[in-house]
Image (cartoon, rainbow over all chains, first blue to last red; front, side):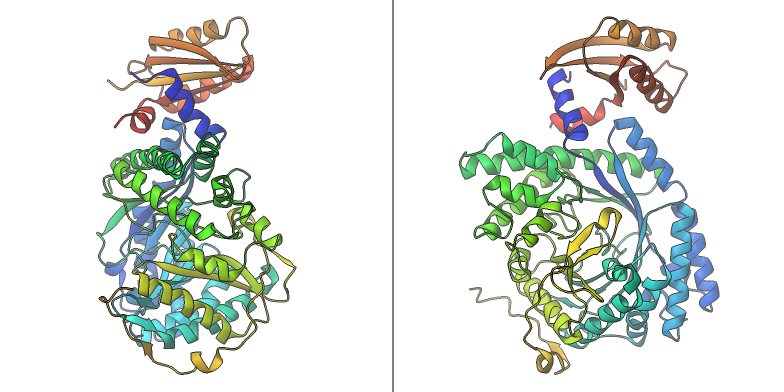
Length: 454
Length: 90
C-alpha cells in the first residue's frame, strides 16, 4: 500500500516543483498521402492527420485529470515533407501549400505544434529537398503551428556543407520575413546532425521513415524536481549528488511511462518511446541553469559548467533508462537560453557566452538552442556556427542541433521577445571574424574515422 | 481493483473529513483507508477509496471534490493510484 508520505512527495513535485509531462506527441506517417497533384496531396494529408489525431487533445486532458498531473503540450510529428511532396511539388511555392495544409490540420485538432516540415540531407540533396529548404522562410511566415528541421550531417555520412551554406542564408531570410515579431520564424526551425527519428520535442520533431504508421511518444520534464532534490544534499560528495539525480530522474520518467502507456491504449496507437529530457520553461523554479547553480556554480557558464552538465546528463539517463521500457528521442538535459530564466540571467551577467554553450553541447542532449544573435550577422557566420555544432555531433556520435535567431534590427544588449513557452532572449555577441572562404568551398566534409579514438 | 487516492491539503479545521466523507457516501464511493499528518504546518490527509461502483466518472468526481475543497478552503485532489505506484515502486 502506498504511504501518505509517498503521496505527499508526488503531489509536492507537481504542485511546487513544476513536475509535468511536457508533451504527448503523435507521430503520423504521411507516406500514403501522396496524390496525383499538390491539391490532392494536401487534402489527403489534412484528412489523415485530422482523423488520426482527432482525440489526441481530449485524451491528453482526460489522462491529466485522472492522474492529477499537468500534460502541457499535445503535438504531432509527421514524415519529412520533402519525401511526401517529392513527386508532386515542382516549386517551393508548392511546398508552402503543404505547410498550410499541415497548419490547418493542426489547428483543427487543437495541437499546439506540428513538426516534420523537414528534409534529411546528411549526404546530399534531391531536387525536392532543395525546394523544401528554399521554401522554409515563406512556410514559417505563412503558418503559425508548423515547425521545420533539416538534418545536414551524421556520424556515418559526414557533413553536407552545401546544405550548411544554404541553411545560413535560409535562417537569415526567415528572420527577415518575420522581423516584426523579433524574427520569431527562426524559433520554429532547427538544424540537426544525427537527428533521431522519434524525438517528441519541438521544433525538431519529425516522424522518421523507420517508424510505424502511427506512434505515441512522450516527453517528460522536471528540472524543478531535480533542483529541489539537490537542495537537500548541499555540500555532499559527488557520489551522493549523482545518486540523488538518478533517483529523481527515475521517478520523473516513471510518470512519463505511465502517461505514454495510457495514451497509447486510449488512442489505439502503439507506444513508441519516452524521451527523458530535462526541459526548462521560463517559469521560476523550472530551470536547468538553477540545477547547475545548485550543483555548485555561481552561474551557468562558470568554469566547471561542462563537467557539471556532463554528470547531470549522464545521471538523468542512468535513472531514466530503468524507469521506462523504451527510451528514445533526445533524452538528456536541454540548455535553451530563452526558455530558461537562469540561463538568461547568466548571459546578462556575462557568465555565459556562445563559445561556452558550444562546449556544453558536447556533453548534453542537444545543442545551441534558442540563442538570439544580432540581426546583422552574416549568413556565412551563421553557417560557420552550424558547421561547428554539426562537427561536434558527427565526431562524438551524438545528436546536436542549432536553433539560432538573428533578430533583425537588434544588437548586443537588446532583448528579443518571443512570448509564451519560447520566452525572451538577450542578444548574444558573436565572434566577428569571417569564415566566408571556408563556407564557400562547397561539397562535403567526409565521415570521421571510427578507430584511433583519442 | 483500481483504487483512487484522495488527498486534502490545507489549514486544519473542524469538519474537513466529515465534508469529504459525506460527498463520498452520497456518491457510493467506499473508503478503504485514511491517513493524516502535518507537514510544515499544513494538514495533509490521504484517503484510499474504491470508486468502481460510483455512477459518476473519475473526471466528474475529481472536479466536484475540487469544488468541495474550495468551499472549505482546502485543496482536494482525486488521482488514480497508479501514478504513486509507478513512481515509488519498482
